[in-house]
Image 1: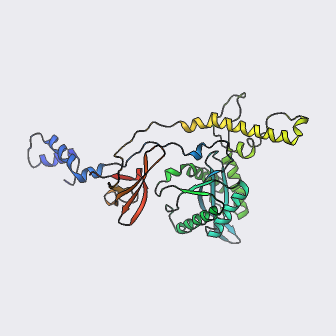
Image 2 (image 1 turned 30 degrees about the horizontal axis):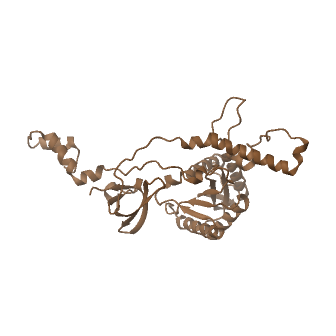
Image 3 (image 1 turned 180 degrees about the horizontal axis):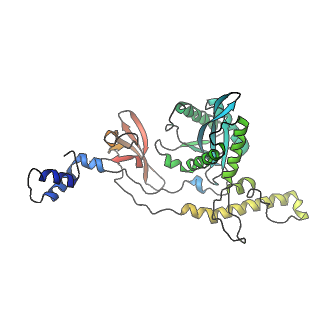
Length: 353
C-alpha cells in the first residue's frame, strides 16, 4: 500500500476482500506503523523565548550590542571593467540603527579594515552577534567565512565578545536579517541593475543608511500635538533628520556645563521614550505553546534539511541540551555520521523510542 492514508488503504483492500470493521482496523495499523509515524511527524516547536538582554539594554551607547551580516556582491565600474564590492552591515540590537561599510573584497585584510572603520566611527562594541557563515552559498562562501574569522580575531584584541547563533537557525538572527532586507530594498530601488562607480556606491550606502535610520520605531501619530515618532537617528544624531532640536536657547545655555546637562537631558528623554513607547512593542508576542516532543539526551532524531526529500533526511543522536535562561531547550548538539553539529530544536524531529 506504499504507506498510504486510511482511505487509500481501505479502497485498495475492498477491491480484493471484504473485512468487517475495516476502517478502524486500518487506522489502528497505520497508527502503529513506524514509517508512517516518522513520515507524518513534525519538528518540535519550543516555547517562544524571551528577548536577549542586548535587545533590552537601555541607556547604553548605540552599537554597544551589535549584529553583523554581509550584503552583496554589488558590481561597480572601474575603468571599463566590473568588479565585486560587498557591504558589511552593522546593526545596533537596542536602538535598531544600522551602519554600512563598503568592503573591496571578503579577504581577511579587507574585513579587518572594515571593522576598524566601524569602531573608529561608532565606538568599540561590547558584543558582536553573527552567524558562522556556514549557510552562505556560491563561490564566495569560503571568503565570507574567512572574513568572519578575521572579524573575530580583530575584535578579540579589543576585548569584544563575539557570539554566534547556531548553524541552520537564521531566524535567531532576525534582528540583523531584517535590516539586510531593508538595506537591499533601499539599494535596489536606486541602483536598478546599474553598475555605478565605487564612490557613487559609497554615497548610495550613506543614503541607504540614512533612510533606514530615519524609519519610525514607534507609532506615527497624526496629531500635531503629539511628539514626533522615535527613530534610530534620535540616538545617533540627537533628533530626527532635518528637524531642529526642540527647545529655545537662552544666554545661560552657552555655559559648557549647562550644554552638557542639556544634551544629557535630551538623551535621557529619548531613552525614556524608548522605554515607554518602543519596549512595549517588543513585549507584544503571540501566545505560544510547546508543540511536539521535547528532545532528551540519547534521543534519535531526524535533521531537517529543506534541500533534501524528507525520506533522505539524515539521522542523529542527541548528545547535549542547551537550555535558555528560562530553562527551555532550543539548541541541541547531535552526533551524526558526519560528526558533531549543533542545530535548533525547530530543525529536528524526535523519533519514537
